Amino acid sequence: MKTTTILGYIAISVFAFITVESVWADSVDDFANKYYPPLKANENDGTGLRIVLHQFFDEVPAASQSEVLARIMERASAATPPDNALIESILSVSEGFQDKKVEWNTHLEKLIYAQAKNPDPNVRGMVVHALAKMRKDAAREVVLSFLNDPDDGVRSRALDSIDQWPDAESIYQGYIQSHHSDADHSKSLQYANDNLNVLHEKGHGQ
Image (cartoon, rainbow, N blue to C red; front, top):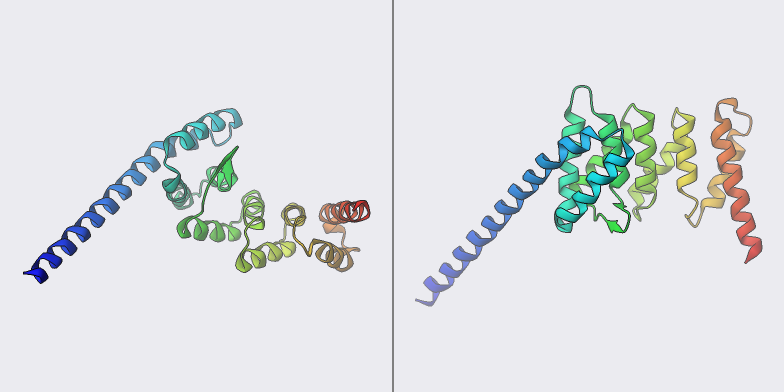
């Protein structure tokens, strides 16, 4: 009798868990379907985008925000051609919006890593900014790989994004030493030199 009762409790618990998961998945899909159109419509309108994002962060539960953004990015990536402007918008808020912070889930994180290979340098530049703030070795390796990006603007974003790293000074010095005579690295070299000077000034000021 006790075994039957325990099995009954287990069955009820499993059913309840599946039901909750199903409801959560449906709500995530509903939010993704709701916010994809306005985010796309305002992807090039800063004011309109901020209005949509205010509503997004007020309405979508914090626990679901990462997955909703992931599904919208997935749809933008699957478009023909990929909707890079919308991908940029998602990347720009992947860290949060104003005082709201997004806790990345593995799905969103995987999609952001994948955008490191996007042919659009603007998207790659946004990826650099997002990954540079992560405290993971894999993210660090990707950010450092952008120092060899074919686009000097992306290389500049990478250099500018690591200024808070504890070893930023040695990275800047190594970059300057390796590329000081490369004409096609003029912008990124300027970033490296400027940031290195700022670090030196902070060091002397302490």
